[in-house]
Amino acid sequence: MNNVLIAGGTGLIGSKLIIKLKQNNYKIVFLSTRPNANNLKDSYYWNPEQGIFPDIDLSQFSCVINLCGAGIFDKDFSDERKQILLNSRTKPIEMLLQQFQSQNVKLPVFISASASGYYENISSEGLNEASPHGRGFISELVQQWEASALKMQAVSERVAIVRIGIVMAEKGGFLEPIRKSLKLFAGAVPGPGHQIISWIHIDDLCDAFIYIMEKKLSGVFNGTAPHPETIGKITKLLAKQLKRPLWLPNIPVWALKIIFGKERHLLLLSSQNIAPYRLLYEGFKFQHPYADEAIQSLGK
Image (cartoon, rainbow, N blue to C red):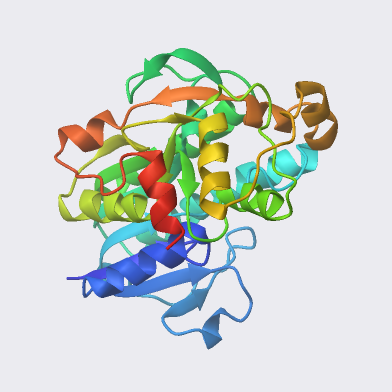
């Protein structure tokens, strides 16, 4: 049984993951909240907020991968936006749980995305999967997200959670706004520049999801590369790749606060040295463990 159901398959990670799964001869079905989903091959429209779920036989799937969640950095953290960020993460899982229960189906593997925001925002010590959660809105959001995912244990033989770090991809993701500003000769390092970024190449992240699924692993995994890097170094590496000067001074904290707001600007000042201990322990091999090579590979 090589059928995989993906919830939230049209985003940055899902789009790449679907390509890789198909290359590995998996049959993919994905759920989308886009109204035109039925016009897309292997896709079905659903709306967890309105209780809409397609007529699908869930017993055909060996794994469900949940990637649902509105972009955390996309908009200001108003009360309304905070509720959207929470609902977009918990409601889809609640609906999946209800549907598996109503069909009386036991799922072999359920894997849910989570985020490195689970941990303390600023940490001088190394962090692993056993490290305590942080404080503040983002950490609380991620904790509720993971609590929802763990409820899938009622209908799943194994549940895995991947705390995803900063994703490096060809287009979109964390690098995109930095690339754009550098191309316009307006690149600058946000904040002091020594903030530690726990990043991961999108290929490694997708391979990690597949590895967890095929090895039938469970528990929490950090979706980060083995060698974090500072935001200052990453920006310099990008500038070098794009052959652009990095001549503007670092963007001061007060300016970041004005541009991104009281809470959202703190994400740019986060400094987390996160280790992918579980993935390494389970034998996963990273293809892009270092930031310099990862950025070069994305520029090819």
